[in-house]
Image 1 (cartoon, one colour):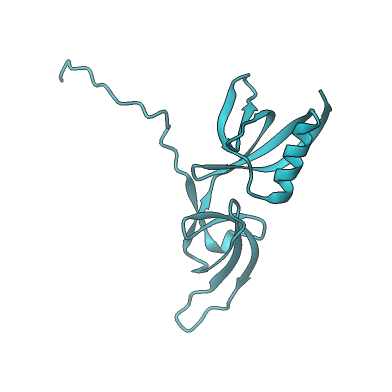
Image 2 (cartoon, rainbow, N blue to C red):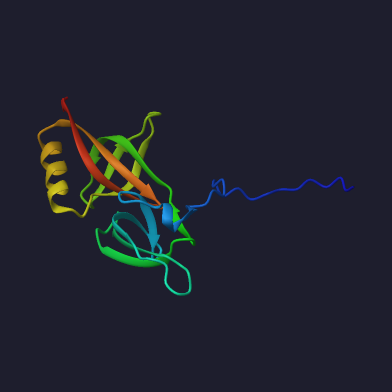
Length: 159
């Protein structure tokens, strides 16, 4: 036994995986799946019959939750697919900077300043107009696989 102390570099990450495995045959419509390293929401699932080599196949049609691109994948139903951990958090909007970043208030009173305005034009207009009118706005931020994006907006009344 040695008496040396071990020092570990902390990266502020618990080492939790960004995805978890799930059998392809158990993934349903409106669930999530990783296709081509992108987190996606499943919009259509069809399962083919077992062929002469004995594997039923699942055909997934899914939409990337951040870019809204349509992706497809075919996986044997007995195989595992990666499923992203998707979190949705609400933050109060404090400020919008000129360079397109938003300042958000977290639940514990800190500010979060590392998020850009959404690329969706309708949502972007709602946020800018509501903020210009001085409304109290709450934005929903979806995060998965190390990416975050504003995905929805709630108006909680005037200030």
